[in-house]
Amino acid sequence: MNAILALDQGTTSSRAIVFDHDGSIRAVAQKEFRQIFPQSGWVEHDAREIWQTQLDVAREVLAKAGLKAADIAAIGITNQRETTVVWDRKTGEPIHNAIVWQDRRTAKFCDELKAAGHAELIQQRAGLVIDAYFSGSKVRWLLDHVPGAHERAERGELAFGTIDSWLVWNLTGGAQHITDPSNASRTMLYNLRGGWDDELLRVLGVPRALLPEVRSSSEVYAETVPGLFEAPIKIAGIAGDQQAALFGQNCFTRGLAKNTYGTGCFMLMNIGGEPQISQHKLLTTVAWQQGGKTDYALEGSVFIGGAVVQWLRDGLGIIKSATEIEALAGTVPDCGGVYLVPAFAGLGAPHWDQYARGTISGITRGTTAAHLARAALEGIAFQVADVLEVMKQDSGIPMNGLRVDGGACANNLLMQFQADVLQVPVVRPRVIETTALGAAYLAGLAVGFWKDRSDVEHAWQVERTFEPTLSADEAAHRRSRWKEALSRAGDWEERSTVKVAPTL
Image 1 (cartoon, one colour):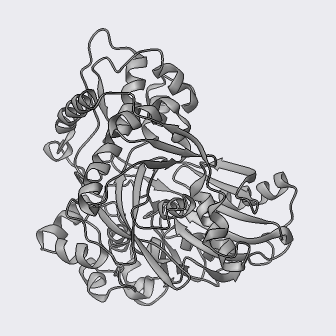
Image 2 (image 1 turned 60 degrees about the vertical axis):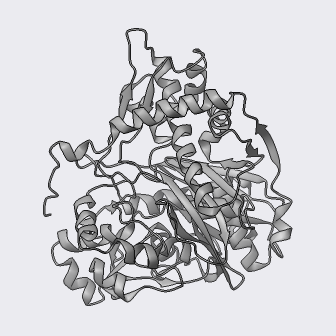
């Protein structure tokens, strides 16, 4: 067996990547799937379409690599986190579309939890702020709005899972209903010290009978059911996408940090073997559980990162493909005083404003599509800088650089501006698909494909380092203008008419 298959199930597409022993990519396959927007602030996926596209690309990538199932040592799974599926245990059919992490329909319920005084309990036990982002409130919505769901859940007829659980269920023909601590710690239902928490389940009104078994992030769980591939393949690694990227970036020691530029942006710092509760509205999350040890991370989540580029393409039509944005933005020397706050789904860390909405400030008659493109890229970088600023305060660890990955980190203009506003070097590795690579490492370590962490560290190689070129004064000035624009985006939806979630 000479390769690992990583299944990378993301927010807009399902991908499969085959990795060799040296961490290099042998083949990639990818398929986009539908984004469903029933009303403003709601985002759904068809869970069956997610499964089918993931299976399709897994088969396709093996063919592209010229490999058979027998050549694959193990499958590692990484996934969009918090996206919530509830399905029938007998039929395997979802009872509703998956509710996506970006979805804001449970904002009012989260306000009720805060008003009832549960914020400290949830932060201390789960490491999370109360927000519609997390899975627990989405499960509760499904139980409340799908007729008969709560009663069926109490009787043990239904199963809840994040996307990792949904994929493993289907890969094993329903034999395994599991998750790992990195995904469980994103639900508001899991105690950071380990295990589903009865008090959190009571507060959110979620029956224990719904929940998957929590297993290590790196162990052999099962084999694929006959009929999916020409031979069974071991399933041996699971981690939420951002924790997988932290592992793939070899951030194995306390203080190492990375930022992933995907649909959203996610900065994680390894804080070691003890959870540390943030004083600045960052999240404390399980990074991974591997080799009998749990590592924790501080995390700052930016809801809209690369998705703003998709909006320029699909919503405004000013670019035809996402790759065109760098060239367009590069035709102007700066943003021309335009600041774009992409709060399309509210603001994440460190602001946590569920009711913020996107704004564009500073438009004049001289503003062009190029200025909007540049402002969109800079808006991504400014949000990341906001997170890094409070992460340094929380951890007490000075940041000497930031490791970056994800699709948008290939954009040199964005990476250079990121270094400029952070005033630290930005380091891009040779393999930027570190999310999938981390899942591959976790699976490969479980089956002995790699013998230990030192065996995988050689694969992390620097492709380019972006050094700051702006002066510290100029960077500070631009960040002050960004914060001014940010203030105009805050608390917007609450001042307008908020739609009431209908009963299905």
